[in-house]
Length: 501
Ligand code: NAD
Image (cartoon, rainbow, N blue to C red):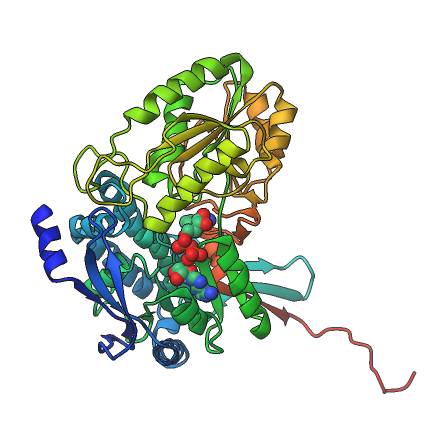
């Protein structure tokens, strides 16, 4: 792997768009360096898609949708294509995991065991789902039959973030294609490697123009895409501020959207919880993916009766996390995505201290490696839920711990947030877990389990964590138009307007 990484740093990869069935030329556009956050070396040169290239990509998708075979493909044909994409990802799994790791800094054990298998699974899941997903028929009214059918929405703009580039974007692509749409995909300009490689390894599987790719920065390529009149909807995963800007742009054309945005998820540990499971899960929820997870459960609430023991055990484990080169086996924490993200971590550590929090561990730039945007995994004991480290999404390896006494108190504090993505609850008391599950204002509640996604259910957020849900029915709602057809099964008795009394 090191040899391949050296080769790439000598000959960086080339990232371009893919429009109408072929990669675009490296026309003289803005060149953006794509960086390996562990080595700080260039791994690719991204030739940014201009507004003109975005226009061509949307037209290619529009043409494929309006006139091509995909929108009318049978379930069997769509399943065959989706399963072929699934197989192609698995056939290239090791390479994709490597590319994901050198682009994001996420440890190879995680990209290899979680991200890439999950990217593939999305396609298999939706291939299976569309065989069962039907419409509805209502016949209760004599003489009438009402049909509800779900038709492809058209051209979908699919915009992904940098923290799980292939896995999260694959979710969108699989859902959009499964329901018969064409799409234009835009990965984050920081992490375009695996999504671009996906386009190479699936060449020939889909009809021309069904899946297109544009690459570039949000304010250039992203805005050109979301403001293009030829798109029918945007499925976006990213930050809340960006999501809000995209919604404003979509409002002009009355276009639909699905928004998977930020989080600040509460992780509530009651005194009766399985202590070891809750501890392992709190570490995982705060530090997996280098802490850069929308569903991080890093706003941790511990019941006072076990607080000293829990905080002591947590504070012992965090400094023992293995920080290192993400391509090395055994590394648990890799670098932040870039220097700006590392500085952001340092600012939160300072803001915590200035607002009265106690530093339990970490809090500084990690200096044990010669290169890389590393930051020490950090934990702070917060004086209240009001401080910035408990309010704002930090998006790095940073846990903010609070102590509570009562169930009502902790549920209220968990809900005191602009976000509402996930609520984690640890207790052995079934009725308490049910009370908490219904009281938490979050799109998902996880009881006695850390991070888990079940595609049969919906994933998404309340409040500023988003709009819409991803997964089976949620993706169907996102990527289809619901159509109602009402048919008279017998002549109807109608008022004879204008025919006299
Ligand atoms: P970001 O908002 O900076 O960027 C996301 C994508 O939007 C990138 O592709 C970017 O180029 C593009 N973009 C930026 N400005 C744009 C604009 N004006 N118009 C169109 N596109 C634009 O987010 P990020 O930093 O890449 O990702 C981190 C954020 O994503 C965090 O807030 C995290 O919580 C969130 N996230 C949410 C989920 C979820 O499922 N809810 C999952 C992963 C990440």
